Length: 187
Image (spheres, rainbow, N blue to C red):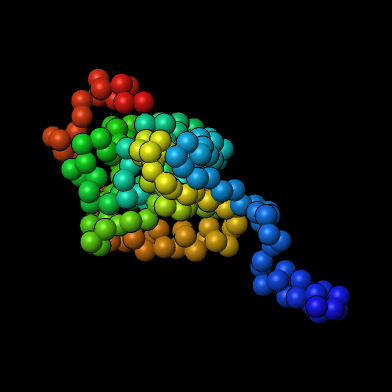
């Protein structure tokens, strides 16, 4: 390939949004599990939130992530959460803990599975991937998490979050919940 052709191909790849092999685009971080730091990345991103946090979660049993959401709420951040219907009966769901701490989750029961795993922070950062907000996802499963600093993408995810908010219903505490005394033991 001649140098002119190579330059043209390189420019085409740049304008197509591709980056050189081995590079991660600026404003993007990637984590893999098991033991890849995804939970820490979620907690750190939540710790830096200042205005709003929108969460969509399929499975949510992570104590550190639940605590980071409560900490954000206590700092005055508007935290809103939509969970899959399975969290009504999941033994270790953090839904009851969040409700008790003043963050009333909503349940998206319109779909067979509300399988989203998304956090939108301050309208400019998106966390997404296969990573469920669970201890098992961090310690046992093969999962991925992207942290993307992009306001345009965040706006799209925010629009989708509000679409699901429109058909979600309030979560109500159930008797299946684990007693609070055991919450600390699960860390």
